[in-house]
Every structure is written in C-alpha cells, then in structure tokens.
Image (cartoon, rainbow, N blue to C red; front, side):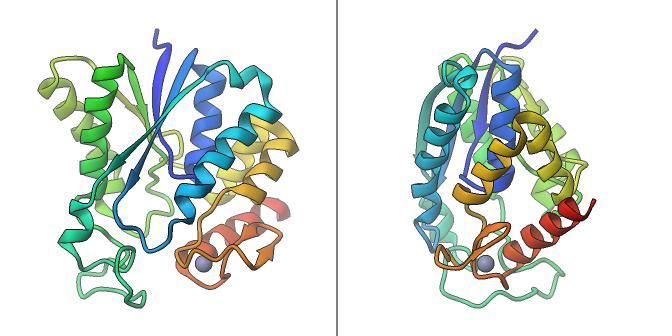
Length: 231
Ligand code: ZN
C-alpha cells in the first residue's frame, strides 16, 4: 500500500487536478516544479497561490500537503529551439509536432523527480501527462511512462511507481474529475487560480479562467470547459 507521493506540479489545470487527486488518496504529498527559462514566470507565481488555496478551502488536505520543491533546469533552454523558451511564434514542425515540444523535457523531469522521491522517501510519482489531448508529444505516452518507471526503479534500485491519472481522459473529463474530488469549490479554484496559457496572459478572464483565448493551450482548455458544461 502506497502512502506517499511526489506530484509534478506546474500550477496548471492538469497538475492541480492531479494534486487534488493525490491529496485525496495519499497521507503525505509533496510537490515538485521546474524552472527552465519559461517565457513567462506566471506559472511559478500561481504554484504558490494554488497550493495555498487548496489548503484554505480543503482543510482535510492541508495536513497532507508537505514541502514544495523547485528545481532549476536551465539546460533545457540552452538546448533552444522551442517556442516555450524562446520568443518565436507557435507553429507545427516538419515532423508533425508543435514547436512547443521541448525534446526530452518529461524524461528529464521524471529522472529528477525519481531522484528527489528517492531522497525524500516518497513511493509514487504523479504526473498529469495525457495521451488523449497530448498534441502528439511522444514523452507523454503511456509507453514512455512505463519505460521511465522501469528505468528509474532499476537505476535507483528502489521500486518507484509512476501514476498518470489523466492518461486516458480528455480535458472535459479532467474538469469532471475535479468536480468529483472537490465539487464546485475545487472547480472554481482551478478556474480562478491555475494557469495554462502559453502566452502568460492573466488579463483576459473567461468562464474557464485567464488566458489569451487563442493559443493552443487556451483553445484546449476552453473546448474542454465547454464540453464539460454542456455535458
Ligand atoms: Zn493562451
């Protein structure tokens, strides 16, 4: 029986839903974020707000939520070429992947998460990757996660489990999952405080939260929200 977890937490809708899910199931939950020269620092700011809001509105979870960790992964921006870390427009690459793809990012994140889980004595790594809405990112695939779980467990000589609660659900179902976990209070908190927009827009407020309303991340969040509300 696993009782402790490390949640990869960016302050977005997906990882916040994963964090709430982990808090409902594990006795001790710690969070991990990464700084890698993102174009916008907003993600870093909302992480704290979201953690505080979760503790405030859900006292039963507050006692379970442990330390927050932030690791610097500057090497990713040194590699260059991604619209997430450079001021270039979003586009599709010749290989069919969007240029928001940062090659190796999730592999690196999971390796660091494994090392931290080892140090902190945490048994399960939780990540919000998803094959349903994944834009074709190969490092979000279920097979990639299974391979990483095996590689980490062997390489660290300790059984580590990688859990992916969102792997087979879409954005509408992610909103529904938040509602199951924490009702309207959690859905409202996610709308108000989590951040998804690639452009870092915290000015324009929509029914589904803040964002530019036109980047691929906003489009996905909005479409999911509309299907969720229409369902
Ligand atoms: Zn946007």
